[in-house]
Image (cartoon, rainbow, N blue to C red; front, top):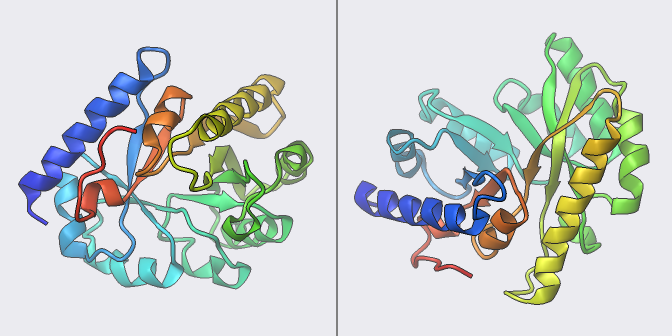
Length: 232
């Protein structure tokens, strides 16, 4: 992809996010989803001011890291198996898909081995889609209290993957529900838990995310895809 086209799409996205936020919230920053894209397509993002990228698969992270020249902060945004935690602890700045106790304890175990604290987001399932991972909203508070005591984790907020409904009131309501849940947890001030980040929204629904106060949107196809995604 030509750098000029990438710049044009990035500017369109940033403008649309600013408009959708409408001064009510700060515009969310873009986490560029780079899965299935080679390093030579990703590297121009650093010249355009994008320093945070998201990857779904551990093996792909390990293959790309040596080729990215240390220019990016990498987020793990896909489902993570416990037996693969050890392979990414040195390479990612955040794990966005923490959704079960055994995974939390495995991250904690490897973090302590490395004498570090791993920033994480707890993934919530806003529509109960088991195949996408995430915990049910009603299970969130006890889960947060359980993992708050783990010294190798720093819970920074919540993440959600929305159902593929297309633009509709039901989808917007799910974004609104996530924002409400985020604010409720933040206001409860659970010891050891911070609510700084709300990661939600992708190429097909990022404007809903901006309207409801996401701090990050995870954008892949709208940057790299064969067509440009217009506002929803």
